[in-house]
Image 1 (cartoon, rainbow, N blue to C red):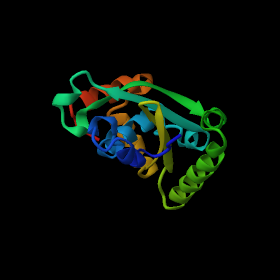
Image 2 (image 1 turned 120 degrees about the vertical axis):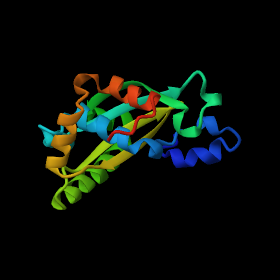
Image 3 (image 1 turned 90 degrees about the vertical axis):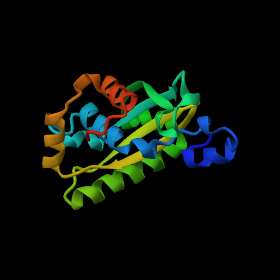
Length: 165
């Protein structure tokens, strides 16, 4: 199983549609993580929770630029134990690395690092997103909280190409 989307370019060299570039959506994914885990109020949820997001090609993907070809279709929060089960043996090492990154960023004054599992075309990628200070995260969540409807919020900003965060 391929774990990094960067490897997909070699698997699908002639079909750019098969390659999901999450890097073009980091602001939106960061905000989804803040809302999904309620990090403005409970930043400790970064310690034992992971966000799972599945994306699929839009029906009109052939007409769209690469950064707008995909949309989220599913998302939920998983415990670290569930994540280890999903990822198998490599999951323990991946989560240990994510935990170390989280603690390192906290030592720098950040809320920490959110860990997301992105799935596209039955292939997964583990994405770590550094977050801002506790106050900045709290204000961001207060300004535009998606609450329990975070997947719908993510779909909305991706569909309308909004860049508010």
